[in-house]
Length: 117
Image (cartoon, rainbow, N blue to C red; front, side, top):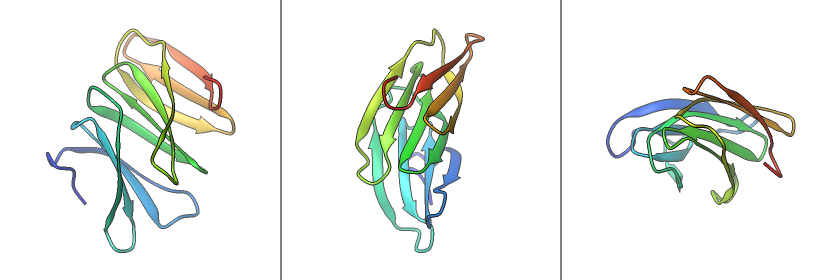
């Protein structure tokens, strides 16, 4: 399982699923079938490398060097929302219930509502 440029940075399994998602410096995320290794979807929306990814239920959340956090629909691969508010790259994301937490190189952490931002 490798991104086009070979620079996977993070991998996370889908909870209760045989799928997993990888994030890369090539600005994309790829959803894989964890049993066959088949690429199921490629998620594009970041303008810089993706630093972290979290997967909870039907949502995939990614944080990247473009200072944004994107919430994705895991089933369709469509972007549900783009959360912007950090002044530097986002290095960490976590999902708990209806909340997303992102941490950035600007020294801040922001708690977002997963549905409304």
